Length: 402
Image 1 (cartoon, rainbow, N blue to C red):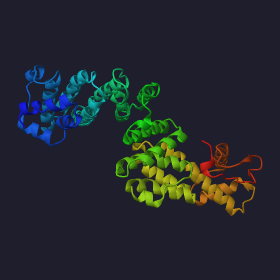
Image 2 (image 1 turned 60 degrees about the horizontal axis):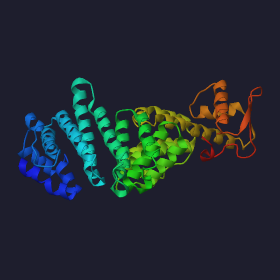
Image 3 (image 1 turned 90 degrees about the vertical axis):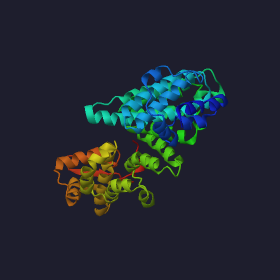
Image 4 (image 1 turned 180 degrees about the vertical axis):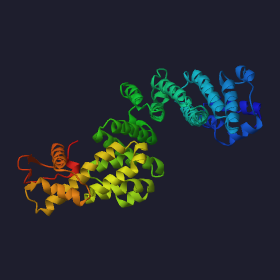
């Protein structure tokens, strides 16, 4: 496709307010983009500054910036491609402020491509200079797009740009997580939830609903709000499309550790669908079921780099309490469920599983388990005895308030 032919192809869809052909014309990774890179080639800076007036303002500039972007992309000049795409969005925002919701699919495509280009640009920049800045800048651009939708006062109802607020909110939060600033997501959530003009989340497309609940759950997960995180992530998993296997796996990466805390384990059939999760979490599940504290500790040490990379290490470490509870319950059962157990009974159980601790440390463990509700009873320090409740001294994990 020649340059003038490409520019002319914008005329009809702009007049008809038809987003689909415009999305195709402005996407960075399709046959049209590849063809433009090959046939149009590089665009001189002088032409970019004076794009002409064949189309409504500022579409000549948008079309030329796209040509410059895809040429840089397909010649592996990722930083240059990102710069052109960011400049394109500055032009697009000028036009968008007077448009209704029909233009949202174009905005989604432009911002998604910007984020992808920013990641590629930062990979190149980090390899050569050790610095990254494109994704930081991209995050601000995405946030500007979010604001233009969240504050739309020109259009009402289905025509309002507010109908795109959840998609853009989730894209903004995705960027914040990527640059290591998840705390800034609270500003996005506050902007969405505090405005009575924002449509309810259940009116958004299902994919946006799933993403929204996922990020709310992730923030609760990081804040240690286990119950809320479990509820939000469970909703996201239950409503995630069946074909979105990667997204399901991502949700389960955080949902499974939360369930381990409560002694609720995924089925073998479920884990079999996600080999990486199966390899990571099955040994922990088996250790909790058997009360094998030593095996749990060894697996925790082996998997630490992976768990830290997944941001779930601390939760899996906390789930060790369930393993310890299981071991102490086995010792109680082996002692004919006596309501009075010598502290040495628990120490012996630990030593049988190759966990060698002194008496004071065992007493500290038991005291902590009682305090946290894993054991119902009290310690007689003078007699080195644990006095257990006569009814249900080892409550089920899922009944323990956290």
